[in-house]
Figure (spheres, rainbow, N blue to C red):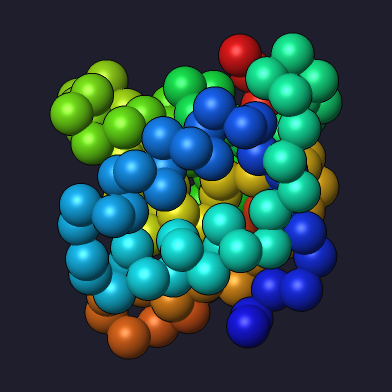
Length: 124
């Protein structure tokens, strides 16, 4: 596993993501499934405010390129690139779920490269 720190997920997000993963299989979903395996589950009302969860708006930085982005993490049927709503099933979405502000993750992307992403802000 590339990233050893645990991630934090609400029980609701965890259950919905498991259901989603049971219906779709791809390289990204396999990586997301691995991430869920290292999740520490909390009650929905106990999620710390600095943790990326579903429907949160996340500021992050690609550490290799220095590029900063702001996205909202959503389920696939809600994705809309024009509104910066990014699906949990994209490499970026799968990488960021459950991370805290300040955490860095190394994550594979479809072009064969790995990127280091750092969470810089979370809003609900």
